Image (cartoon, rainbow, N blue to C red):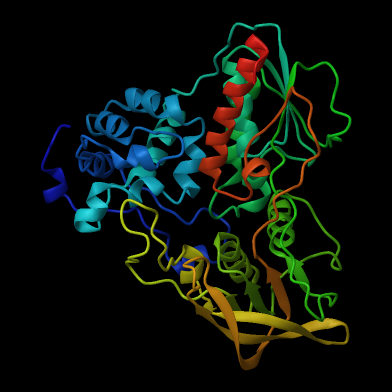
Length: 449
């Protein structure tokens, strides 16, 4: 630690977002960057805690005190080496991770100004690519082959780790591009897709084979592999089966988000298949990150209005005694998309869709109350009888995803990512890929699981 008092003299400085009036007209990344000098100053705020809770909170076991000290001293190559020992894809997590590490930072507890760990991480990997530090490496092969089914963050993580260990890895992707959730689920304004392409090129040069447009039947896995890893995510979205669900204009969130990303990649769709918010009143049902992404996309498409409703109560602002430090705080989150224009409401349950000429034109909602459970378990929901109708020409369902039910799998088949745990974070999927790669290596070398 170069300056043990930096956290007292240097305030937290975030790069921030591009101005709303500027970013709302395009799909470029909304987050800005600091210059090198400012970034080094931010890294100097890390106190190198004796017990680093940032390390404890990170699913990958990243070591922020170490790579931030190297960053502060201007040792970018060393910072890159330290960072990538634990994190295969800092260019992804540095953009879209909610930064569990920062919420557990001691400076978050003491002054509500944690070190900008996520932004520092992104700065390190971008400097590494810019300065030619990211070079394909070639590993001695061990003669064994592994098939990875799915190319999302978990699949890429498994493939990368096994390739380093000498396995010949083939990644099978049922869609037309590599990336899974990163490619189709996350808008370009949060993760520019050439960032994925750049990493995939490195992985290909290191010997990993990618087979796109190649769906795999779990009952007939490709032959010729010593082990398999299923990384197929949670493709089934949670539905809302209430009266009127069959009306036109009601879509799963991922249908809209994936199509928009395809459009930006150059694909075209007939007017009758195009899902667009242009000139419409949009209702997003679901208050999570996917719902937020729908808001940002709808505003960019030219929505007349956007409303987001959530069945759960409004979270506390700033602090929540139920989730004290160093836990992840359950508090009100305002994303860049929310800032761009959206009405947000809580404790609303949807009771029926209302249509006109076969298309949705509104949703009847009812206020609900959440009461503490007598046994201290999950709170109980109680309808209040207070109903109203919200105008909506386009309804986007963003209520989460269902965990897949897998058949009995052979001994040499492993699972990683959301397909194993249910929907989670990209950083957790990468960490799950690490664990799966270790399990596969142990199985292939010892025969034990």
